[in-house]
Image (cartoon, rainbow, N blue to C red; front, side, top):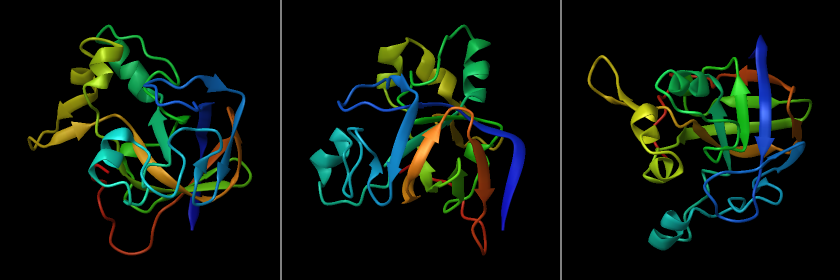
Length: 185
């Protein structure tokens, strides 16, 4: 059964037909089941991220859609970083959903029709420092138990296509069974 948090919303959407770090914010994106975001360089059934293609181009694409919580912008701003929607390469910027606390397999219903399945964490990389020096340290931290905290958002695959726009509601549907924590994909 899904739960809707009234404050859970899409803040912005972005796409880019080239492999650049940041994605321009657009009015709407069209999600295509099993493919990703129409017109985005990372869409496809097999991996599209250049480093992963170099290792094995036949791998399934578990990174069709990158979602990032706008709350991280507030957090990094406290350490002097200015980040806006699309800057960190996300396709969907959210607010009001603890993306990093979701279990693997969670369904996120975006707007009226679209639905994505969370596959894992985005592993922040050096490109973040290339965008803004010191930002990588701000989105990588240590939990109380000493484990690495990755705050670069989550990756997902498209289950049901549809158009997604800023202001759309987000409904969270947790998977059945024992929750599996997110790991980098």
